Image 1 (cartoon, one colour):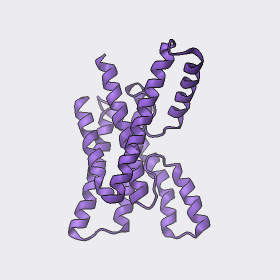
Image 2 (tube, rainbow, N blue to C red):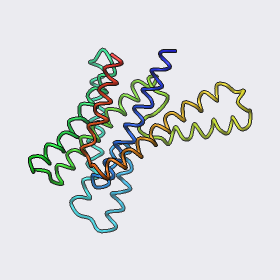
Image 3 (cartoon, rainbow, N blue to C red):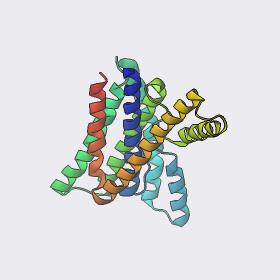
Length: 219
């Protein structure tokens, strides 16, 4: 029971953080997706046909940053006694990213390149979370940074429940698990949209702190 409870809150926390970070960077960092990095292809293509400049090409930089992060996440997992160490580094990067924004504002050196630096650091952090999801798939109910697969599974489960009723306990349990991931991500998106609009990228310190606490509770 304790293990299941642990998986529940880890899943909820990771999906909320991914949704939050993805939306904060999109709202406050020139429409950059930090978790759904493939979405940057769409933004890049759209900006190209509208009339592009140097900033447009920054979107493509998210892919090598993400790839390097996943590779480093794999190395961290190999060298660490706990896979949750990956989440510690993710949390630390998010906290430092948010802190950089406040420091830059305080000392007057904030610029668009500060914004891009923080956005790319957030992409890197999300790459670490993706690595954790692949390497530690049993620690969560499903992918925590991309919801397409979870929505697909939830739809299949719902179809089976409508056909067979709630007596199919295995399908019902699967459906409930998918709802945790979807609800968590959606909640994170709403929170990220609000804080990103009114408070900016500095609010990345909050998911950073939450991730570090998650690490401490699981080690």
